[in-house]
Amino acid sequence: MKRWRTKARISREELAAASNYSPDTIKAMEQGVRMPTPRALDVADELCHAEGLLSAAKDYLHRERFPARAQDFMEREKEAISRWSYEMALIPGLAQTESYARALIENRYPPLGEETVEARIAARMERQAILTQRTPPVAASFVLYEAVLRSPQVDAAQLRRLLEVSRLRNVELQVLPFERAISAALMGPMVLLETGDHERSVFTEGPFASELSAEPEIVSRVAGRLSMIRARALSPDESACFIERMVDHSHE
Image (cartoon, rainbow, N blue to C red; front, side, top):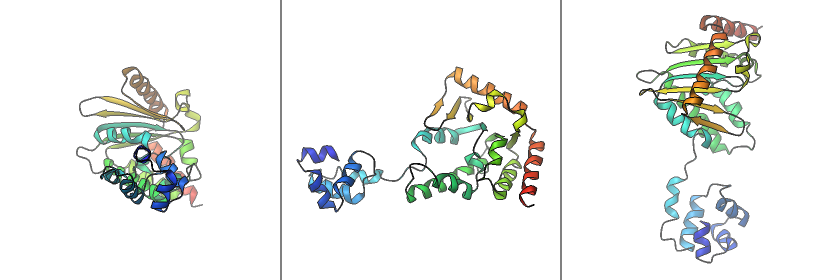
């Protein structure tokens, strides 16, 4: 939009006045800080004689349903036949209730716009279908550090949702109690995916950066850590009892 505007020798103030936005808003759109609106694109197209090329960008204005750093992982996840994961702070997205997901997504910094919040909550709920509506179903293994369950955002409804997920025949859910933690369990969350043609990739996520990798050395390292953590965790049956006791205590 900026290139067309400067080529046509239109000032930012002129475009702002014609589209009924402030110059600062137009600047934010041109810098990618704000998403351009259909109106801004249409006015810019006419004012800058872009012959429909700017207006055509309106087709690309839909908001991404997942954060940019997770989009490649979500695509790979759709193709996976097996999914192993370990979480040390948050309930996995595939097992979250809507209220838990909302609490996380609404309280981001910097804050997200209302439309983005609703789109991401809806996308997270829809994504859970891979556990129940896939043929063949994905084989999923979740290991949760006890701290995940002790979070103030985790209520009885979320605990019951975990039990519901754990009863699916294609799912194993384990809890790693505080007293069984090992160093590998304190290095952050990790996911190991395997596709139908036996290609494996791993996804690791930090507060500011995430990585999706198919490098054999990285895949082997993550697989080893996941195996160590699973071996230390409670069995699926013991884990279900652990969570059931937490549900009972939440009603006391």
